[in-house]
Length: 264
Image 1 (cartoon, helix red, strand yellow):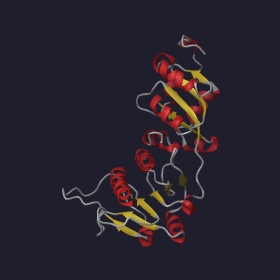
Image 2 (image 1 turned 30 degrees about the vertical axis):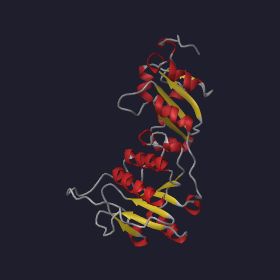
Image 3 (image 1 turned 45 degrees about the vertical axis):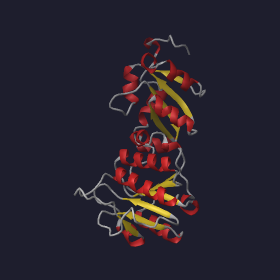
Image 4 (image 1 turned 120 degrees about the vertical axis):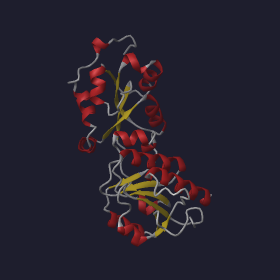
């Protein structure tokens, strides 16, 4: 495929692979096909660095740029040229970027709770940006993995993958257990369940972070499920400025890095 290829040679929006890629904006098709969307050159390059396997790419040849095209062609996966309509059909971004990759979904790590020493638990997080940010934080701090409970958005959501900055392909994950089931499994396996709670007495900066730690970040509106409170300890971030609460991802970042400092 040559760089000089023009938009008249772009594949139709009815092309089966364009239609398949567009369907991946819905969870049921991501789960059915075991594929996810990765949009944008930097995100694709980070995904490649983390070992992502791409089935094919869609590229708007006029806007993608030579460096981007060289990077995706180096993977050996097919590159389909698309026009503006094809890009908009597939893109989940407010401003579509020039390259979209269709990658193999990362399979769930079924043994995560049994084998790990430090994990995050996303309890019924419904904002893909929040879940993706937790994945990014976990990957950056090199925790062992992340579990999401039933009712959470899926890890393969396009916005979650973007927010993860490619961490989706680096951090082991497990999704689907009910909150009560998850809390019970953690208790059976000897975990210290630590629940982020603004009303807790213990301060995150004066806390024992030793042992097998499962840090629970609760639903944006309702907080963590009662099963996690029953199974574990509570910790709060001091907010002397009088703000009532922090965004789930911001809170997770503060706590994870304090725990990392203490554990090192």
